[in-house]
Image (cartoon, rainbow, N blue to C red; front, side, top):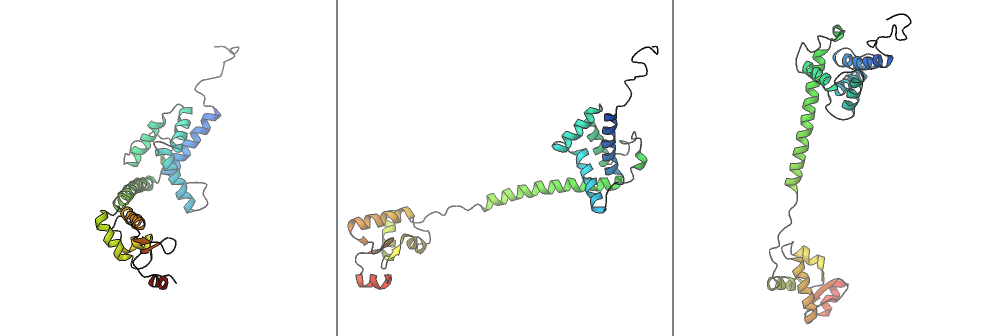
Amino acid sequence: MTLTDPDYGVHHSRTTPEELLVFSILSRAILDLFGSVGLTANEDEAKTAKRDALIFLTQKSGGWAKRRNELCEAIGVDGDDMRARVVRVLEGDTMALETYETRGSLTQVAEARALWEYEKSATERARTATIEAKLYRRKEKPTRKQNSFTKYSDVRPIVFKLLDRPRSFKDLIIATNGDVSDFTIREVLRIGIQKGEVIKPENATYVLASVPQTAVAEVTV
């Protein structure tokens, strides 16, 4: 290669500005997680930054994982392999970051591991709470009460006994405490009206035809 070669002095191993920016972003995430967090105004912001770094570096799927893998791909690094290495450190491996050039700055590995355990347990707690809530709702789901009386011959005397005064259909349901089929009550009233045994002195109320009208008037006044 001579000086007249147009590619003289250009090497493919040279890092581009774009790649340097990606390296800076990934290195900052590593440092935020395992070292002291910089550029934060207070302790709460520092905790938030450390947690964000943890999620960014360890999430298996979702927006954070997608962004991490895109950045890693831009510099020829396997994003899943990077995640696996970080997780090994968080799980207690002391050698996974030996190749990290500024590992001397990673002074808060113990804190990162504690945060990792907390986040894992929080995820498990949330999953357990969701399962328990579903089981509770299934257990507490109200079951429709079975009517004790459904036959017309059984329901008719019960209803007629209650029609010694004007009562609405709702009154009859409440008075029978749900033990009597509402469908059969309607049948008793319908057939009773057809036979002239039941009358409707006022709209939406029923009473036996044999009940004196003076008594009905007293109740409805």
